[in-house]
Each structure stands twice: as structure tokens, then as C-alpha cells.
Image (tube, rainbow, N blue to C red; front, side, top):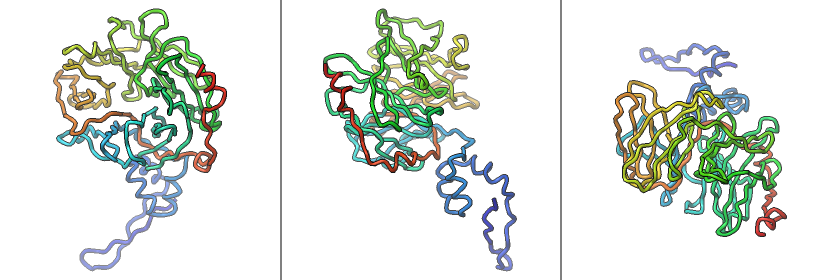
Amino acid sequence: MKSPNLPEADQVTGQQIKLPEIPGQIIPDILSRLPVKSLCRFKCVSKSWQYLVSDPKFSLKTNVSRAIFWIETSPFLHSVNPDLLGENILNPLSEIPYRPNQNQVILGSCKGFILFSYSTSIYLWNPSIRCCKKVLRLSLLRENYTVVASGICFDEVSDDYKIVILLSPITGRRIILLASLRSQAWAEINHPHSMFSAKSGPVVNGKIHWVVREEKGDRDLIFYFDKTTNRFVKLPMPDNNVGDSTDIFRLGVLDGCLTLSRFGNIWDLEHITEVLIMKEYGVKESWMTLCFIPMKGPRIWSPPLFYIKGSRDEVLISNGLSVVVFSLKDQTMREFPFAMMPHEFCMYVESLTTIPERLRDQRREQNASGSMERAAET
């Protein structure tokens, strides 16, 4: 692959000079280290660069995580840049492809995509390349059902995305639904315990994770969805899983590792939040305490958003009103208030992944008005 041979004028003679060519074999390596925004612009440099960047086999060597917040009164998606903490903590990132209101629910993120519902429609969206498509329909979302837990993962075996949603009615039993984007059909699956996770479950090691409470008892457990068997599997909890039934647990991801945050009762004016991290996936003994963060005020806290390695080793976390930066080395805390109150947030990794052609070309929408929904109403 040849690099673009762009002439440049000599500042002394004014004559065009020919710049040396970049060896073609190192161009993919250079481009793979650039931000997605730059790569989208560089598609216009040449046909060969456009082909390279658009190739599904082209992968980024950088994993740039984004924390995004949706604000009811704003037509934009907002992001938090850990390198630009200041007065304007929320920065407009991308325009939302619909008029925002409280009917929108974030269902999960995977491979750079954000999955969200708007009314009865479910969308797959890559904010990095501004690609959005309606992929599913679920008419139960129009009725008196609330999304309690959800998530999306990619199944390499079937080359398909799978979506799990737990719905809770005002009265009656909860139901767990599974759909794949290829089949466009919903099916009900079983779970032995009561799931009460904070909506979208984080994806670690290709699996969706949720906090679950035992049906009989008051212990909290971590379960993940096995995309091969379509079953739920228990993950080891840390030994220091102590506390009372009022404690609140949140799962997150830092540097590709699963994190578990334990908060005290949200109505306590002062309490300590413990953040634990699973350094080796699936190994109980690898759980370790990352930090203890003092909290004030009755607020709902998010899982850790970022882990910034450096002279201070800082963890970023949100309390719904601001972003809190906690230093692991000197145990100090800085707070950056939000100018506008966000009502939804999600973590995703920048990617060039596009929506599969079979979904973009698909015109048929399949809702859940069949036997599954009739069974749910009984």
C-alpha cells in the first residue's frame, strides 16, 4: 500500500518538492494508533486509506473509553474527558438521532455500540462514527413494564449480537427476554434468582454481568450470561462481601477488569464506598480492594468511570450531580459539578465497527406480540 504523495512548496524557491513516501507496510500500524475521529477524516486522503480503514479486519490498537451522559433537555450526547476536567465537565460529543425525552433507556454497550430503546423501538448506535439503526421492536415497552436489567454481547460462534432484557410489570411476575439481531425474535428464558442490577450490565471477557439477589436469603451474587448456552452462570464474589441488606452494589469495568462497588444506604448522609477489582477474570482470589471513597449526601453513585494511571493514580466516579476524582496515592478528592443534570449514563469504547449489512438492509420488524407476550400477561 502506497502512502499519498502530497507535494509541498519550498519556502525559499517556491518550487514544489516531493515528500518522502511512508513505507506501505507501516501505514496500517500508524493508522491503528490514531483516534477514531481522525481516522474518519483520513478516509478522504486516498482510496487505499479508505479501503484500509473501512476493512472489518482493521482493528485499533488503542482502547479509548468514553463515559457518556444523556440529558433530557439537550439534543446532544455529552461525554466526560478525563484529560479535560474543568468548569465544563460535560462536553457535547454527538447529536442524538431523535428528540430526547424520558422514554429513552440505555440497554447496554458492546464493541463500540450503544444499545438503547426509544418507545417500543430498539436501536444500535455507534457514536464514534455516527451510525445508528433500528434493529428490534418490543411492544411490551409500550405497556406497564419497566426495564430492570439489560445488556448486549457479541457471540463469535454465530457471528451475531444477543440482547437480554429483564422486564418488571406493575403487578405480576418479571420476565427475562432474549433476542438475537439475526433472528429478530424474542424468547423467554429463566433465571433462578431475583435480578435487581442497575439496568445495563457491563461486558467483561465477552460476557454481560449483573448483580443478583438470592431468591431465598439476602446475599448478593454476580451472574453472567453464557452466550453459548443462553444460561446464567455464577461468578465468584470477593471474600469480604459483608454488610447488611441495605448495601447497594454496582458493577463496572476498569482497564478491562470487572469492578464491584459497594455503597452504603443511599439515605445515609455519610458513608464509605469500597471499590474492588477482579484482576484475573473468574478467579475468586484475584479480587482486591482498589480504594475506599468517602461519600456525602443521599445520592446514587455510579461505578468507577475511569482509572487514570500516573503520578496520582486517580479514579473517576459520578454521583449524579458531579464527577468526583479520587487520588489513590494521597487519598484526596476533587469534585467537578455538572452544569446540567444527566439522567442516563453509559460506558463504551471507541470503535470503527459498522452495523452489519444484514441489519441495515433489513426492512422487516418483528415485535413481541406473539405467544411470548400472551404468556407474560397471564
